[in-house]
Image (cartoon, rainbow, N blue to C red):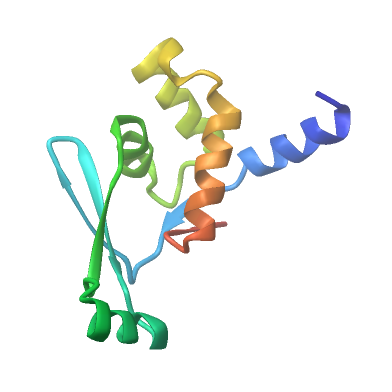
Amino acid sequence: MTRKKEIKMENYLEKVPAIRRDLDWNESNGLVTVVQKNSGFYNKIAQKFFGTPKESNIDLDELGSFIWLSIDGKRNLIEIGEMLKEEFGEDAEPLYPRLVKFMQVLVDVKYIDLI
């Protein structure tokens, strides 16, 4: 990994994730389900003509659920990564690239904000 990429990764790992307040989700037996509302013009058309649901349930796997439940708006990604390593050991590897990619996806779908 180049020095520039290392610096970028370090800066990203110092960010603190926070779950968006307007997002509905629930937890059962350690697994998280995020409820995504399908709103907007095109979704309304799809619901009317194709019977698509008004809400979609997004089930997170064991690692994703652990990460989600670790997000408290205070811990940065380094701390969450340490917790993940302690809980899952080698099953979490490659730890930080995987964690960063998961966070990028959560930001892209507007489930979390990075502070």
